[in-house]
Length: 578
Image 1 (cartoon, rainbow, N blue to C red):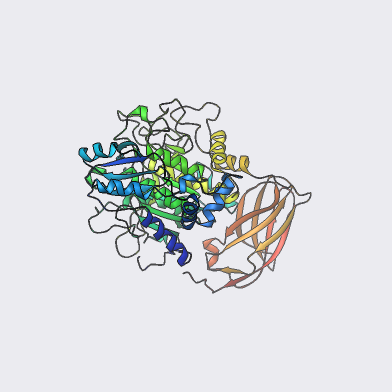
Image 2: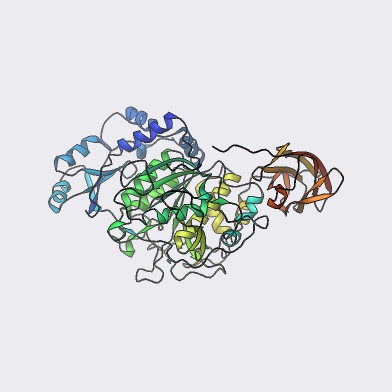
Protein backbone atom coordinates (compact mmCIF):
# COMPACT_ATOMS: atom_id res chain seq x y z
CA UNK A 1 0.00 0.00 0.00
CA UNK A 2 1.02 3.59 -0.47
CA UNK A 3 1.78 5.82 2.49
CA UNK A 4 -1.10 8.26 1.94
CA UNK A 5 -4.19 8.24 4.14
CA UNK A 6 -6.46 6.09 1.95
CA UNK A 7 -8.59 4.13 4.39
CA UNK A 8 -8.54 0.37 3.73
CA UNK A 9 -11.00 -1.42 6.00
CA UNK A 10 -10.46 -5.09 6.77
CA UNK A 11 -13.05 -6.33 9.23
CA UNK A 12 -11.19 -8.69 11.53
CA UNK A 13 -8.87 -11.65 11.07
CA UNK A 14 -11.81 -13.94 10.39
CA UNK A 15 -12.64 -11.92 7.30
CA UNK A 16 -9.12 -12.44 5.95
CA UNK A 17 -9.32 -16.15 6.70
CA UNK A 18 -12.45 -16.44 4.61
CA UNK A 19 -10.73 -14.80 1.67
CA UNK A 20 -7.73 -17.08 1.95
CA UNK A 21 -9.97 -20.14 2.20
CA UNK A 22 -11.85 -19.21 -0.93
CA UNK A 23 -8.77 -18.52 -3.01
CA UNK A 24 -7.07 -21.72 -1.89
CA UNK A 25 -10.12 -23.85 -2.50
CA UNK A 26 -10.61 -22.35 -5.96
CA UNK A 27 -7.47 -24.10 -7.14
CA UNK A 28 -6.00 -21.02 -8.82
CA UNK A 29 -2.61 -21.51 -10.46
CA UNK A 30 -0.62 -19.28 -12.75
CA UNK A 31 -0.40 -20.00 -16.43
CA UNK A 32 1.41 -18.49 -19.37
CA UNK A 33 -0.65 -15.56 -20.60
CA UNK A 34 -0.67 -16.57 -24.25
CA UNK A 35 -1.81 -20.17 -23.63
CA UNK A 36 -5.35 -21.08 -24.63
CA UNK A 37 -7.74 -22.25 -21.93
CA UNK A 38 -10.78 -24.51 -22.03
CA UNK A 39 -13.77 -25.08 -19.75
CA UNK A 40 -14.35 -28.63 -18.50
CA UNK A 41 -17.94 -28.95 -17.25
CA UNK A 42 -18.88 -31.81 -14.92
CA UNK A 43 -22.10 -33.81 -14.80
CA UNK A 44 -22.55 -33.61 -11.01
CA UNK A 45 -20.73 -32.84 -7.76
CA UNK A 46 -20.12 -36.40 -6.73
CA UNK A 47 -21.48 -38.54 -3.94
CA UNK A 48 -19.66 -37.18 -0.88
CA UNK A 49 -21.73 -36.23 2.17
CA UNK A 50 -24.03 -33.29 1.43
CA UNK A 51 -23.97 -32.32 5.11
CA UNK A 52 -20.19 -32.05 5.03
CA UNK A 53 -20.29 -30.07 1.77
CA UNK A 54 -22.83 -27.65 3.24
CA UNK A 55 -20.63 -27.20 6.30
CA UNK A 56 -17.64 -26.39 4.09
CA UNK A 57 -19.66 -23.95 1.98
CA UNK A 58 -20.88 -22.12 5.08
CA UNK A 59 -17.25 -21.58 6.12
CA UNK A 60 -16.48 -19.22 3.20
CA UNK A 61 -19.80 -17.38 2.84
CA UNK A 62 -20.04 -14.37 5.15
CA UNK A 63 -23.07 -13.71 7.37
CA UNK A 64 -23.77 -10.58 5.34
CA UNK A 65 -23.91 -12.62 2.13
CA UNK A 66 -26.29 -15.12 3.75
CA UNK A 67 -28.52 -12.27 4.93
CA UNK A 68 -28.57 -10.76 1.44
CA UNK A 69 -29.48 -14.14 -0.06
CA UNK A 70 -32.29 -14.58 2.45
CA UNK A 71 -33.65 -11.13 1.59
CA UNK A 72 -33.64 -11.88 -2.12
CA UNK A 73 -35.05 -15.41 -1.85
CA UNK A 74 -37.25 -15.63 1.23
CA UNK A 75 -38.18 -19.15 2.21
CA UNK A 76 -35.39 -20.67 0.08
CA UNK A 77 -32.26 -22.30 1.54
CA UNK A 78 -29.42 -19.77 1.65
CA UNK A 79 -26.85 -22.45 0.71
CA UNK A 80 -27.58 -24.68 -2.26
CA UNK A 81 -25.90 -27.06 -4.70
CA UNK A 82 -24.22 -24.15 -6.50
CA UNK A 83 -22.18 -23.40 -3.36
CA UNK A 84 -20.81 -26.91 -2.93
CA UNK A 85 -17.25 -27.67 -3.94
CA UNK A 86 -16.42 -29.36 -7.23
CA UNK A 87 -15.75 -33.06 -6.69
CA UNK A 88 -12.00 -33.38 -5.94
CA UNK A 89 -11.93 -36.84 -7.53
CA UNK A 90 -12.86 -35.24 -10.86
CA UNK A 91 -10.03 -32.72 -10.47
CA UNK A 92 -7.55 -35.49 -9.70
CA UNK A 93 -8.66 -37.42 -12.79
CA UNK A 94 -7.97 -34.38 -14.98
CA UNK A 95 -4.61 -33.85 -13.31
CA UNK A 96 -3.64 -37.44 -14.13
CA UNK A 97 -4.11 -36.44 -17.77
CA UNK A 98 -1.80 -33.47 -17.24
CA UNK A 99 -4.70 -30.98 -17.12
CA UNK A 100 -4.15 -28.61 -14.19
CA UNK A 101 -7.09 -26.32 -13.26
CA UNK A 102 -6.56 -22.57 -13.46
CA UNK A 103 -9.95 -21.62 -12.00
CA UNK A 104 -12.48 -23.85 -10.27
CA UNK A 105 -16.07 -22.59 -10.40
CA UNK A 106 -18.59 -23.92 -7.90
CA UNK A 107 -21.48 -22.17 -9.64
CA UNK A 108 -20.72 -23.64 -13.07
CA UNK A 109 -19.48 -26.98 -11.68
CA UNK A 110 -16.51 -26.62 -13.99
CA UNK A 111 -12.81 -25.85 -14.18
CA UNK A 112 -10.78 -23.89 -16.68
CA UNK A 113 -7.39 -25.24 -17.74
CA UNK A 114 -4.76 -25.13 -20.45
CA UNK A 115 -5.03 -28.30 -22.54
CA UNK A 116 -3.68 -29.77 -25.76
CA UNK A 117 -5.96 -31.36 -28.40
CA UNK A 118 -4.82 -34.79 -27.23
CA UNK A 119 -5.66 -33.99 -23.61
CA UNK A 120 -9.08 -32.66 -24.61
CA UNK A 121 -9.82 -35.84 -26.53
CA UNK A 122 -8.82 -37.98 -23.54
CA UNK A 123 -10.86 -35.85 -21.11
CA UNK A 124 -13.95 -36.03 -23.31
CA UNK A 125 -14.06 -39.79 -22.74
CA UNK A 126 -14.30 -39.45 -18.95
CA UNK A 127 -17.80 -40.38 -17.74
CA UNK A 128 -18.22 -37.27 -15.56
CA UNK A 129 -17.37 -34.73 -18.31
CA UNK A 130 -20.54 -33.04 -19.51
CA UNK A 131 -18.98 -30.80 -22.17
CA UNK A 132 -15.77 -28.92 -23.07
CA UNK A 133 -15.54 -25.44 -24.54
CA UNK A 134 -13.12 -22.57 -24.99
CA UNK A 135 -12.67 -19.89 -22.35
CA UNK A 136 -13.67 -16.58 -23.95
CA UNK A 137 -11.14 -13.82 -24.49
CA UNK A 138 -11.82 -10.30 -23.26
CA UNK A 139 -12.72 -7.81 -25.97
CA UNK A 140 -11.73 -4.34 -24.75
CA UNK A 141 -14.61 -1.99 -23.93
CA UNK A 142 -12.34 0.78 -22.72
CA UNK A 143 -12.93 4.49 -22.35
CA UNK A 144 -10.02 5.68 -24.48
CA UNK A 145 -10.75 9.10 -25.87
CA UNK A 146 -9.44 12.01 -23.80
CA UNK A 147 -11.73 14.83 -24.81
CA UNK A 148 -11.21 17.76 -22.48
CA UNK A 149 -10.25 18.94 -19.07
CA UNK A 150 -13.08 18.97 -16.56
CA UNK A 151 -15.35 21.97 -16.52
CA UNK A 152 -16.33 23.91 -13.46
CA UNK A 153 -19.46 22.29 -12.07
CA UNK A 154 -22.03 22.50 -9.36
CA UNK A 155 -22.94 20.72 -6.14
CA UNK A 156 -24.11 23.14 -3.59
CA UNK A 157 -22.84 25.29 -6.47
CA UNK A 158 -19.24 24.07 -6.23
CA UNK A 159 -18.54 20.56 -5.09
CA UNK A 160 -19.07 18.27 -8.11
CA UNK A 161 -16.47 19.93 -10.30
CA UNK A 162 -16.32 18.38 -13.76
CA UNK A 163 -18.48 15.43 -12.69
CA UNK A 164 -21.59 17.59 -12.31
CA UNK A 165 -22.89 17.00 -15.85
CA UNK A 166 -22.63 13.20 -15.80
CA UNK A 167 -24.30 13.01 -12.39
CA UNK A 168 -26.94 15.69 -12.89
CA UNK A 169 -28.05 14.18 -16.21
CA UNK A 170 -29.35 11.14 -14.32
CA UNK A 171 -30.45 12.99 -11.14
CA UNK A 172 -27.79 11.62 -8.81
CA UNK A 173 -27.42 14.92 -6.90
CA UNK A 174 -31.11 14.75 -5.94
CA UNK A 175 -30.43 11.62 -3.87
CA UNK A 176 -27.19 13.06 -2.50
CA UNK A 177 -29.19 16.01 -1.20
CA UNK A 178 -31.42 13.60 0.67
CA UNK A 179 -28.38 12.13 2.42
CA UNK A 180 -27.93 8.99 0.31
CA UNK A 181 -24.30 8.57 -0.75
CA UNK A 182 -24.09 4.79 -0.97
CA UNK A 183 -23.27 4.29 2.71
CA UNK A 184 -23.86 0.73 3.88
CA UNK A 185 -23.67 -0.70 0.35
CA UNK A 186 -20.83 -2.93 -0.88
CA UNK A 187 -19.84 -2.51 -4.56
CA UNK A 188 -17.48 -5.00 -6.21
CA UNK A 189 -15.56 -3.58 -9.17
CA UNK A 190 -13.97 -6.07 -11.60
CA UNK A 191 -11.37 -4.54 -13.89
CA UNK A 192 -7.72 -4.28 -14.92
CA UNK A 193 -6.30 -3.07 -11.63
CA UNK A 194 -6.41 -0.12 -9.28
CA UNK A 195 -4.05 2.58 -8.00
CA UNK A 196 -5.57 4.45 -5.07
CA UNK A 197 -3.02 7.17 -4.22
CA UNK A 198 -5.09 10.05 -5.58
CA UNK A 199 -6.65 12.90 -3.64
CA UNK A 200 -10.14 11.94 -4.85
CA UNK A 201 -9.73 8.37 -3.55
CA UNK A 202 -8.05 9.33 -0.30
CA UNK A 203 -11.01 8.31 1.86
CA UNK A 204 -12.23 5.31 -0.17
CA UNK A 205 -13.29 2.34 1.95
CA UNK A 206 -11.86 -0.88 0.50
CA UNK A 207 -12.97 -3.97 2.39
CA UNK A 208 -10.88 -6.45 0.39
CA UNK A 209 -9.02 -6.75 -2.90
CA UNK A 210 -7.60 -9.64 -4.91
CA UNK A 211 -5.57 -10.07 -8.09
CA UNK A 212 -7.06 -13.05 -9.95
CA UNK A 213 -4.36 -12.88 -12.63
CA UNK A 214 -1.34 -13.24 -10.34
CA UNK A 215 -3.18 -14.81 -7.39
CA UNK A 216 -2.23 -12.33 -4.69
CA UNK A 217 -3.68 -9.39 -2.80
CA UNK A 218 -2.07 -6.61 -4.87
CA UNK A 219 -4.39 -5.01 -7.43
CA UNK A 220 -1.95 -2.27 -8.49
CA UNK A 221 0.70 -2.88 -11.18
CA UNK A 222 3.33 -5.50 -10.48
CA UNK A 223 6.49 -6.71 -12.17
CA UNK A 224 5.66 -7.82 -15.71
CA UNK A 225 2.52 -5.68 -16.00
CA UNK A 226 2.24 -3.11 -18.74
CA UNK A 227 2.30 0.49 -17.45
CA UNK A 228 -1.33 0.86 -18.56
CA UNK A 229 -2.52 -2.26 -16.69
CA UNK A 230 -4.11 -0.27 -13.86
CA UNK A 231 -5.42 2.65 -15.94
CA UNK A 232 -8.86 1.42 -16.95
CA UNK A 233 -9.84 0.09 -13.54
CA UNK A 234 -8.60 3.15 -11.66
CA UNK A 235 -10.59 5.53 -13.83
CA UNK A 236 -13.74 3.41 -13.79
CA UNK A 237 -13.56 3.17 -9.99
CA UNK A 238 -13.21 6.94 -9.65
CA UNK A 239 -16.52 7.55 -11.45
CA UNK A 240 -18.24 5.81 -8.53
CA UNK A 241 -15.95 6.50 -5.59
CA UNK A 242 -14.23 9.87 -6.07
CA UNK A 243 -14.73 12.51 -3.39
CA UNK A 244 -12.75 15.72 -3.73
CA UNK A 245 -14.90 18.78 -3.25
CA UNK A 246 -14.68 21.34 -6.01
CA UNK A 247 -13.03 18.87 -8.38
CA UNK A 248 -14.96 15.60 -8.52
CA UNK A 249 -17.73 13.81 -6.64
CA UNK A 250 -18.50 10.24 -7.69
CA UNK A 251 -21.91 8.65 -7.96
CA UNK A 252 -21.72 6.74 -4.64
CA UNK A 253 -18.63 8.03 -2.80
CA UNK A 254 -19.54 6.60 0.63
CA UNK A 255 -20.06 3.02 -0.50
CA UNK A 256 -17.65 0.26 0.52
CA UNK A 257 -15.67 -1.56 -2.16
CA UNK A 258 -14.31 -4.96 -3.14
CA UNK A 259 -11.68 -4.63 -5.87
CA UNK A 260 -10.90 -7.53 -8.21
CA UNK A 261 -8.10 -7.41 -10.77
CA UNK A 262 -9.45 -9.73 -13.46
CA UNK A 263 -8.44 -8.28 -16.82
CA UNK A 264 -4.95 -8.67 -18.30
CA UNK A 265 -4.15 -5.97 -20.86
CA UNK A 266 -1.07 -7.77 -22.20
CA UNK A 267 -0.98 -9.98 -25.31
CA UNK A 268 -3.20 -7.66 -27.35
CA UNK A 269 -5.76 -7.27 -24.60
CA UNK A 270 -6.01 -10.94 -23.75
CA UNK A 271 -7.84 -11.84 -20.57
CA UNK A 272 -10.05 -14.77 -19.82
CA UNK A 273 -13.61 -14.88 -18.54
CA UNK A 274 -12.62 -17.43 -15.89
CA UNK A 275 -10.97 -14.65 -13.86
CA UNK A 276 -14.30 -12.84 -13.84
CA UNK A 277 -16.23 -15.93 -12.75
CA UNK A 278 -13.80 -16.58 -9.90
CA UNK A 279 -14.15 -12.93 -8.83
CA UNK A 280 -17.96 -13.14 -8.91
CA UNK A 281 -18.00 -16.13 -6.55
CA UNK A 282 -15.45 -14.39 -4.29
CA UNK A 283 -17.37 -11.10 -4.14
CA UNK A 284 -20.76 -12.71 -3.66
CA UNK A 285 -19.45 -14.81 -0.78
CA UNK A 286 -18.04 -11.69 0.89
CA UNK A 287 -21.40 -9.93 0.82
CA UNK A 288 -21.28 -7.70 -2.27
CA UNK A 289 -24.55 -5.94 -3.05
CA UNK A 290 -23.53 -4.69 -6.51
CA UNK A 291 -21.04 -5.88 -9.14
CA UNK A 292 -19.87 -3.21 -11.60
CA UNK A 293 -18.05 -4.62 -14.60
CA UNK A 294 -16.96 -2.63 -17.66
CA UNK A 295 -16.03 -5.37 -20.11
CA UNK A 296 -17.37 -7.80 -22.67
CA UNK A 297 -16.40 -11.17 -24.20
CA UNK A 298 -16.98 -12.01 -27.86
CA UNK A 299 -13.84 -13.48 -29.43
CA UNK A 300 -14.82 -17.16 -29.03
CA UNK A 301 -18.50 -16.49 -29.60
CA UNK A 302 -20.91 -15.87 -32.44
CA UNK A 303 -23.99 -13.67 -32.28
CA UNK A 304 -26.22 -16.71 -31.79
CA UNK A 305 -24.35 -17.34 -28.53
CA UNK A 306 -25.66 -14.04 -27.14
CA UNK A 307 -28.85 -15.76 -26.00
CA UNK A 308 -28.45 -15.32 -22.24
CA UNK A 309 -27.63 -18.98 -21.63
CA UNK A 310 -24.56 -20.01 -23.62
CA UNK A 311 -21.56 -18.00 -22.37
CA UNK A 312 -20.24 -19.28 -19.01
CA UNK A 313 -19.68 -15.70 -17.84
CA UNK A 314 -23.33 -14.89 -18.55
CA UNK A 315 -24.45 -17.96 -16.61
CA UNK A 316 -22.29 -16.84 -13.67
CA UNK A 317 -23.60 -13.27 -13.84
CA UNK A 318 -27.19 -14.49 -13.75
CA UNK A 319 -26.38 -16.79 -10.83
CA UNK A 320 -24.96 -13.83 -8.91
CA UNK A 321 -28.27 -12.03 -9.43
CA UNK A 322 -30.21 -15.08 -8.25
CA UNK A 323 -28.15 -14.94 -5.05
CA UNK A 324 -29.13 -11.29 -4.51
CA UNK A 325 -26.39 -9.26 -6.21
CA UNK A 326 -27.24 -6.52 -8.72
CA UNK A 327 -24.88 -7.08 -11.69
CA UNK A 328 -24.26 -3.95 -13.78
CA UNK A 329 -22.48 -4.49 -17.11
CA UNK A 330 -21.33 -2.21 -19.94
CA UNK A 331 -23.07 -2.96 -23.25
CA UNK A 332 -19.79 -2.81 -25.19
CA UNK A 333 -18.15 -0.47 -27.68
CA UNK A 334 -18.91 -2.42 -30.85
CA UNK A 335 -21.71 -0.21 -32.19
CA UNK A 336 -19.62 0.90 -35.16
CA UNK A 337 -17.90 -2.46 -35.67
CA UNK A 338 -18.89 -5.52 -37.69
CA UNK A 339 -19.95 -7.24 -34.48
CA UNK A 340 -22.44 -4.40 -33.72
CA UNK A 341 -24.17 -6.18 -30.85
CA UNK A 342 -23.78 -6.42 -27.09
CA UNK A 343 -21.27 -8.91 -25.71
CA UNK A 344 -21.31 -11.44 -22.87
CA UNK A 345 -22.31 -11.08 -20.03
CA UNK A 346 -24.42 -8.12 -21.20
CA UNK A 347 -26.80 -10.64 -22.81
CA UNK A 348 -27.89 -11.97 -19.42
CA UNK A 349 -31.60 -11.80 -18.74
CA UNK A 350 -31.03 -10.67 -15.15
CA UNK A 351 -28.10 -8.26 -15.53
CA UNK A 352 -28.48 -4.49 -15.93
CA UNK A 353 -26.87 -3.68 -19.30
CA UNK A 354 -25.76 -0.08 -19.79
CA UNK A 355 -25.32 1.77 -23.08
CA UNK A 356 -23.77 5.21 -23.58
CA UNK A 357 -25.07 8.65 -24.57
CA UNK A 358 -23.46 12.07 -24.76
CA UNK A 359 -24.26 15.02 -22.51
CA UNK A 360 -27.24 15.90 -24.72
CA UNK A 361 -28.73 12.42 -24.42
CA UNK A 362 -27.79 11.34 -27.96
CA UNK A 363 -26.63 7.75 -28.43
CA UNK A 364 -22.85 7.37 -28.68
CA UNK A 365 -21.87 5.84 -32.03
CA UNK A 366 -19.70 3.21 -30.34
CA UNK A 367 -22.43 1.99 -27.96
CA UNK A 368 -23.32 -1.65 -28.71
CA UNK A 369 -26.83 -2.57 -29.75
CA UNK A 370 -29.39 -5.29 -29.08
CA UNK A 371 -31.35 -7.36 -29.33
CA UNK A 372 -30.04 -10.53 -27.77
CA UNK A 373 -30.10 -13.48 -30.16
CA UNK A 374 -33.31 -14.73 -28.55
CA UNK A 375 -34.97 -11.39 -29.19
CA UNK A 376 -34.82 -9.58 -25.83
CA UNK A 377 -34.34 -5.79 -25.73
CA UNK A 378 -30.83 -4.65 -24.79
CA UNK A 379 -29.32 -2.49 -23.47
CA UNK A 380 -31.59 -1.94 -20.48
CA UNK A 381 -30.70 1.71 -19.84
CA UNK A 382 -28.22 4.39 -20.91
CA UNK A 383 -26.10 6.88 -19.00
CA UNK A 384 -23.44 9.36 -20.06
CA UNK A 385 -20.43 7.67 -21.69
CA UNK A 386 -18.91 10.49 -23.73
CA UNK A 387 -16.55 12.95 -22.04
CA UNK A 388 -17.11 11.50 -18.56
CA UNK A 389 -14.95 13.07 -15.86
CA UNK A 390 -12.54 10.65 -14.16
CA UNK A 391 -9.27 10.92 -12.33
CA UNK A 392 -5.93 10.71 -14.08
CA UNK A 393 -4.06 7.62 -12.92
CA UNK A 394 -1.69 8.85 -10.20
CA UNK A 395 2.06 8.31 -10.29
CA UNK A 396 3.54 5.29 -8.53
CA UNK A 397 4.70 7.49 -5.66
CA UNK A 398 3.12 10.59 -4.18
CA UNK A 399 -0.49 11.72 -4.33
CA UNK A 400 -2.23 12.26 -7.66
CA UNK A 401 -4.33 15.38 -8.12
CA UNK A 402 -5.21 15.67 -11.82
CA UNK A 403 -8.39 14.82 -13.74
CA UNK A 404 -9.38 14.02 -17.29
CA UNK A 405 -12.36 13.02 -19.47
CA UNK A 406 -12.89 9.53 -20.88
CA UNK A 407 -15.39 7.86 -23.20
CA UNK A 408 -16.88 4.39 -23.61
CA UNK A 409 -19.65 2.25 -22.21
CA UNK A 410 -17.01 1.43 -19.59
CA UNK A 411 -17.59 4.96 -18.28
CA UNK A 412 -21.39 4.65 -18.46
CA UNK A 413 -21.50 1.41 -16.44
CA UNK A 414 -20.10 2.79 -13.13
CA UNK A 415 -22.57 5.68 -13.22
CA UNK A 416 -25.41 3.16 -13.33
CA UNK A 417 -23.76 1.05 -10.60
CA UNK A 418 -23.60 4.18 -8.45
CA UNK A 419 -27.31 4.77 -9.00
CA UNK A 420 -28.05 1.21 -7.89
CA UNK A 421 -25.99 1.79 -4.74
CA UNK A 422 -27.97 4.95 -3.94
CA UNK A 423 -31.27 3.11 -4.36
CA UNK A 424 -30.06 0.32 -2.05
CA UNK A 425 -28.79 2.91 0.41
CA UNK A 426 -32.28 4.44 0.51
CA UNK A 427 -34.03 1.06 0.73
CA UNK A 428 -31.77 -1.89 1.71
CA UNK A 429 -34.64 -4.38 1.42
CA UNK A 430 -34.77 -4.10 -2.38
CA UNK A 431 -34.16 -7.20 -4.49
CA UNK A 432 -32.06 -7.08 -7.70
CA UNK A 433 -34.91 -7.49 -10.17
CA UNK A 434 -36.99 -4.88 -8.33
CA UNK A 435 -34.22 -2.39 -8.99
CA UNK A 436 -33.74 -3.44 -12.61
CA UNK A 437 -37.48 -3.21 -13.26
CA UNK A 438 -37.78 0.19 -11.58
CA UNK A 439 -34.88 1.62 -13.60
CA UNK A 440 -36.47 0.37 -16.82
CA UNK A 441 -40.00 1.53 -16.06
CA UNK A 442 -38.95 5.02 -14.97
CA UNK A 443 -36.35 5.71 -17.67
CA UNK A 444 -36.87 8.31 -20.40
CA UNK A 445 -38.10 5.94 -23.14
CA UNK A 446 -40.05 3.47 -21.05
CA UNK A 447 -43.12 3.80 -23.30
CA UNK A 448 -41.13 2.90 -26.40
CA UNK A 449 -37.96 0.89 -25.59
CA UNK A 450 -35.64 -0.07 -28.43
CA UNK A 451 -32.33 -1.84 -29.02
CA UNK A 452 -30.25 1.35 -29.08
CA UNK A 453 -31.27 3.19 -25.90
CA UNK A 454 -33.10 0.33 -24.20
CA UNK A 455 -35.69 1.83 -21.86
CA UNK A 456 -33.80 5.11 -22.01
CA UNK A 457 -31.81 7.53 -19.90
CA UNK A 458 -31.82 6.75 -16.19
CA UNK A 459 -34.12 8.90 -14.05
CA UNK A 460 -32.75 8.25 -10.57
CA UNK A 461 -35.27 10.34 -8.67
CA UNK A 462 -38.20 8.68 -10.43
CA UNK A 463 -36.77 5.23 -9.70
CA UNK A 464 -36.28 6.22 -6.07
CA UNK A 465 -39.90 7.29 -5.79
CA UNK A 466 -41.10 4.10 -7.47
CA UNK A 467 -39.09 1.96 -5.04
CA UNK A 468 -39.64 3.96 -1.88
CA UNK A 469 -41.35 2.06 0.92
CA UNK A 470 -44.75 3.35 2.06
CA UNK A 471 -44.31 6.84 3.47
CA UNK A 472 -46.03 8.11 6.57
CA UNK A 473 -47.36 11.61 5.89
CA UNK A 474 -47.38 13.71 9.06
CA UNK A 475 -50.31 15.99 9.90
CA UNK A 476 -48.10 18.98 10.70
CA UNK A 477 -44.74 20.27 9.47
CA UNK A 478 -41.96 19.89 12.03
CA UNK A 479 -38.21 20.24 12.37
CA UNK A 480 -37.61 17.01 14.26
CA UNK A 481 -33.83 17.09 14.81
CA UNK A 482 -30.51 18.66 13.85
CA UNK A 483 -27.35 16.59 14.23
CA UNK A 484 -24.54 16.71 15.09
CA UNK A 485 -25.00 19.55 17.53
CA UNK A 486 -22.45 21.00 18.34
CA UNK A 487 -21.18 21.11 14.76
CA UNK A 488 -17.42 21.13 14.11
CA UNK A 489 -16.57 23.83 11.59
CA UNK A 490 -13.64 22.01 9.97
CA UNK A 491 -14.95 22.06 6.40
CA UNK A 492 -15.71 18.34 6.29
CA UNK A 493 -18.37 17.51 8.88
CA UNK A 494 -21.87 17.07 7.49
CA UNK A 495 -24.91 18.46 9.30
CA UNK A 496 -28.23 16.66 8.86
CA UNK A 497 -31.67 18.17 9.43
CA UNK A 498 -34.62 15.83 9.95
CA UNK A 499 -37.96 17.20 8.74
CA UNK A 500 -41.55 16.03 8.92
CA UNK A 501 -43.02 17.19 5.58
CA UNK A 502 -46.78 17.28 5.05
CA UNK A 503 -46.22 17.75 1.30
CA UNK A 504 -43.36 18.03 -1.17
CA UNK A 505 -41.92 21.51 -0.91
CA UNK A 506 -38.96 23.68 -1.82
CA UNK A 507 -36.80 24.05 1.28
CA UNK A 508 -34.14 26.62 2.09
CA UNK A 509 -31.93 26.29 5.15
CA UNK A 510 -29.99 29.35 6.32
CA UNK A 511 -27.62 30.12 9.16
CA UNK A 512 -28.18 33.16 11.45
CA UNK A 513 -26.15 34.58 14.32
CA UNK A 514 -27.68 35.45 17.69
CA UNK A 515 -28.24 39.05 16.53
CA UNK A 516 -30.63 37.77 13.89
CA UNK A 517 -28.25 38.51 11.03
CA UNK A 518 -28.08 36.04 8.15
CA UNK A 519 -24.62 34.47 7.99
CA UNK A 520 -25.05 32.26 4.92
CA UNK A 521 -27.17 29.76 2.97
CA UNK A 522 -26.67 26.06 3.69
CA UNK A 523 -29.22 24.29 1.46
CA UNK A 524 -31.68 24.95 -1.37
CA UNK A 525 -33.76 22.17 -2.89
CA UNK A 526 -36.94 20.11 -3.01
CA UNK A 527 -37.77 17.74 -0.15
CA UNK A 528 -40.38 15.00 -0.57
CA UNK A 529 -43.43 14.58 1.62
CA UNK A 530 -43.02 12.18 4.52
CA UNK A 531 -42.02 11.80 8.12
CA UNK A 532 -38.34 11.91 9.05
CA UNK A 533 -36.96 13.26 5.77
CA UNK A 534 -33.20 13.77 6.06
CA UNK A 535 -31.46 16.74 4.44
CA UNK A 536 -27.65 16.76 4.67
CA UNK A 537 -25.35 19.71 4.03
CA UNK A 538 -21.89 21.09 4.72
CA UNK A 539 -20.90 24.59 5.77
CA UNK A 540 -19.89 26.28 2.48
CA UNK A 541 -16.15 26.69 2.00
CA UNK A 542 -16.43 30.49 1.96
CA UNK A 543 -17.95 30.41 5.48
CA UNK A 544 -15.53 27.97 7.08
CA UNK A 545 -12.77 30.55 7.60
CA UNK A 546 -15.13 33.34 8.67
CA UNK A 547 -17.33 31.39 11.09
CA UNK A 548 -16.26 31.60 14.71
CA UNK A 549 -17.25 29.42 17.62
CA UNK A 550 -20.52 30.28 19.29
CA UNK A 551 -24.29 30.05 19.31
CA UNK A 552 -26.24 30.28 16.04
CA UNK A 553 -29.67 29.51 14.65
CA UNK A 554 -30.67 27.67 11.53
CA UNK A 555 -33.83 28.84 9.77
CA UNK A 556 -35.75 26.22 7.79
CA UNK A 557 -38.08 27.87 5.30
CA UNK A 558 -40.69 25.92 3.34
CA UNK A 559 -43.92 26.63 1.50
CA UNK A 560 -45.63 25.61 4.73
CA UNK A 561 -43.81 27.42 7.53
CA UNK A 562 -40.59 28.86 8.97
CA UNK A 563 -38.87 27.06 11.85
CA UNK A 564 -35.78 28.06 13.86
CA UNK A 565 -33.42 25.76 15.74
CA UNK A 566 -30.42 26.81 17.87
CA UNK A 567 -27.09 25.12 17.18
CA UNK A 568 -23.55 25.49 18.49
CA UNK A 569 -20.61 25.83 16.13
CA UNK A 570 -17.08 24.92 17.24
CA UNK A 571 -14.28 26.39 15.11
CA UNK A 572 -10.56 25.78 15.31
CA UNK A 573 -10.98 22.02 15.82
CA UNK A 574 -10.29 19.18 13.43
CA UNK A 575 -11.40 15.58 13.11
CA UNK A 576 -8.58 13.02 12.86
CA UNK A 577 -8.64 10.81 9.75
CA UNK A 578 -7.35 7.25 9.77
